[in-house]
Amino acid sequence: MISRRQFVGTTALVTAGGLTAWAQQPPPTRRPVVISTWRHGLAANEAAWKILSKGGRALDAVEAGVRVSESDPEVSSVGVGGRPDASGQVTLDACIMDEKGDCGAVAYLRDIENPISVARMVMEKTPHVMMVGEGAKRFALANGIKEKQLLTARAKQDWEKWKTQHPDAIQHRQINVENHDTIGMVAIDAAGNLSGACTTSGLAWKLPGRVGDSPIIGAGLYVDNEVGAASATGVGEAVIRAVGSFLVVELMRQGHSPQQACRLATERVIAKNPNWKDLQVGFIAIDKRGRTGGYCIQPGFDYALYDHENGNRMLPAPSRIAAE
Image 1 (cartoon, rainbow, N blue to C red):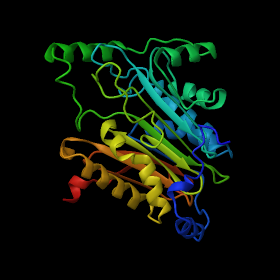
Image 2: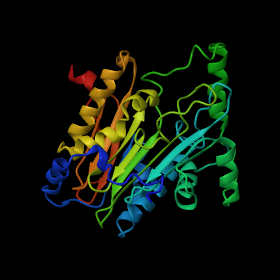
Image 3: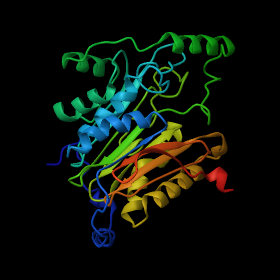
Image 4: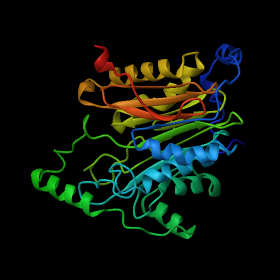
């Protein structure tokens, strides 16, 4: 019996012809490779590369990589230092997925510095995919994770300023191009196996209890070891409506390059959101051959890429707005 954690092959959604076409592709030509969202991805990539360059597993690399952003108080959209919700509480979401299709996630988690590691514990120590709220926190504490204050003085000051300007918090959440979140990371290791991680403190000033795409397998992150992996960033509600990261992977299965798949998935997001010009959504992807790509709605989304050939560097993602 297949466990709930295993999204093996998604064979019910894929034709035999599509699998045959993929099998005819050349073997991987570039590995290891790691790609992650936004400028804080540079430091995250460095941590991941220490593992990948020594022949380590992609799963260990992506966990170690995004932990760097989670623990950095200067990163205002992930972990410690993340901006709080409308009530002043910092709540974290994360998910992780490996080459076998196993996955774990946490949502609305408080007082825990590295939610990605709790998500991995959910994957490896329980029969579940996702745990949330107080239950997720109790699970983390029971497994040796220590509590930590996540609200920094700077984040608290930003929240107090916002609260003064917007006393009607329900009507004045900043869910737009200026308020993005997340670090998503996907990697292929020397053995040719893929894994991914996605973690965030969510949209600043969100309604208490709100959860975006980041902890949702198929939305914020998806990995299929036959094909590739993808992660999303930006306004989670828009990504969820398109099941964005799963869509990117399935487009790669159909024969599209990672770059093409990210562009086509972005077009799907646009089609499902009439107010798309007010949103930012971006995707990154890597395929089984080690090729990578990224695309977004608005200019300004960049991503970090690390490989043997060129080292660790930032790349600007093409955008739909810029193409008009």
